Image (cartoon, rainbow, N blue to C red; front, side, top):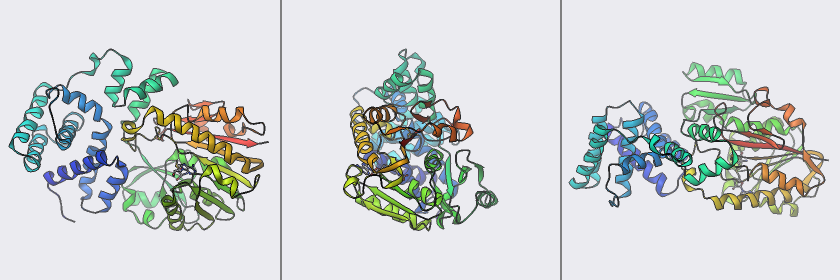
Amino acid sequence: MNNMTAYQLRNTILDLLLRIEKDSGFSHLLIDNEMKSKRIAPKDEGLLTEVVYGTIQRKMTLDYYLDNFVKKNKKMDAWVRMLLRMSVYQMVYLDKVPDHAIIHEAVEIAKQRGHKGISSFVNGVLRNIQRHGVPDTKEITDDAKRLSIETSHPEWLVKRWMTMYDYETVKTMCEANLTRKPISIRIQPMKITREKAMRMLEDLGFETRASLFSEQGIIVEKGNILHTELFRKGYVTIQDQSSMLVAEMLEVEPGMKVLDACSAPGGKATHIAEKMQNEGQIHAYDLHKKKVRLIDEKAAQLNLTIIDANPGDARKLGELHEDASFDRILIDAPCSGLGVIRGKPEIKYHKKEEDIKRLAEIQLEILEHVAPLLKKDGLLIYSTCTVDTAENEKVVQNFLANQTDFQIDESFFGTLPNELKRAPGITRNGLQLFPEYDGTDGFFLTRLKKI
Ligand SMILES: C[S@@+](CC[C@H](N)C(=O)[O-])C[C@H]1O[C@@H](n2cnc3c(N)ncnc32)[C@H](O)[C@@H]1O
């Protein structure tokens, strides 16, 4: 592996940021690919991840700062603005590299990518910021606007959340979205115990702790799991703790017949298969044919054989399966993803309010079409990785309003892990996890019972 110079590393970071912006690419996937390419030395991985995530996470705040130092209507190529953003990010939020070195590297990059005029412009803006400091956002008097700029969330989104939750909850949530998400992993219990996996990781210098949400979960505080044999050989897989709650709460047993209606890439289907000790049947569907392969790959990696994955629209599964034929059903619905902003920060800039309305309609359609496939006394989990009540509470309420043979399974609340029994997001209709809570994603789940 060649060690990159600071200049090359900054150039790679700039390229990554531009790709993420241009292709609306998922930052975590592009960063993982970059790491896997082995071009980045382990000592540089931290800085790369920090600058890429940080610059995306704080894009609106950085633009607010820059607008104070750049003439209005100044035409700027996308790469110049991005170079300024990532440099200001490092100057304001990181203290790893001195400002003069950050400015020097930015000017070198500008010289190479552009011409002398651009490098002097970059130099001028950054030196001005170094001299005068960034403007104080406290001057913005409107709460929603200030929170929007300070935490870099679109104003419509902040306003929307303020209609759903009190200001302090929204503020905490937006601030949590600016922090790094701890990685959590799930052990494959047929291959290794949690204690052994934790011991092995700690021997390798990782810092770990046991998840309180799932007996299979481990939180990795420090260390890159992608580089370990444990990960490569399928002894563990990456999954957010909140997602692990789903298979825990589905209460499956070996031999059951289970439907996972929106299954790709198979994180929860494989967990359910593990809980069933790989005995029984899991019918897994996903609308997108290409993604079905991901379910098969994950199952193969974890040596799980009971998952039958196929393309299919959840709203048409009644054409393939008889009514009342499944013991358990999971609907992990397509959603706005507004609960996973911390791990995929670009989401907050791409979503629109109309998307949420349309998604809520699809979610209700899926629930209504899939529900008849559940046996009497069977359990159905509805989950999403969003904090938007229109996609969570409201969908469940609307579904129940037109049903006589389903109800919220009250015993669900009793079976939650103790730490969650009094979580702030518990309502009559389910559990809303917020991203600041024990490092999970923003996630909603509820359990319905067929009576
Ligand atoms: C939240 S993701 C599922 C994640 C998955 N359960 C896991 O744990 O890995 C939602 C999935 O629903 C799929 N999807 C969207 N519309 C669908 C539909 N009408 N029928 C079935 N799947 C759908 C999407 O392609 C996406 O993969």
